[in-house]
Length: 251
Image (tube, rainbow, N blue to C red; front, side, top):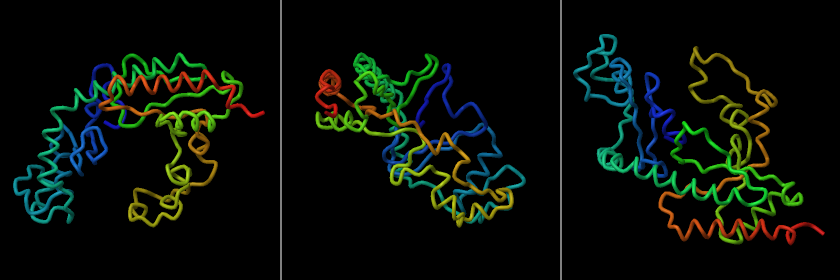
């Protein structure tokens, strides 16, 4: 639900035994806080509710979990009733909202792709994105006389365009790759104490593609409710900046 919605007509999350979807306030299907697990396996369903509930699951059918019907696994992770009610209503509108986002993004990317140096990342025809995350655009500096990406972004932002220097693998705050952050370096979380986890050391250089994300990418918004006027403002800003790039060059 974060990115791809459909692959060859099949809904992502239904391919395997379990699918998980977050419904935190900024997601495509927001309900305040919470999530959904979908499965067609009774055992997996009951294992999940043993983790999320207690004192409310007296009718467990899986023999291995019946002994937990009173205490469950000792946790309560169920979402609030209000959030669940909101989610049920929001679900009715999800397909329409995804379609609107997709149309807005396609219109924007197709238009700015006509600007020198701007190359949106293209998806195969059999993939339908949901655009929780923003779409990536590749910038070819040589097309604009070697203009630094930072200067291009500054100029676009000055025109009111919400464009950001970003790429897969870049962490928002300190730009460290995930496996080099304190959580994975210090390994103080209880998950690292589980025997099946084993001892894993993450060192610099282990994942070069993650540690050195592409520096030619930037993002534009995936508008859920953009007007035609707003989209055209973005397009005109790209045309203006790229059409006058020589004024931004050093010397």
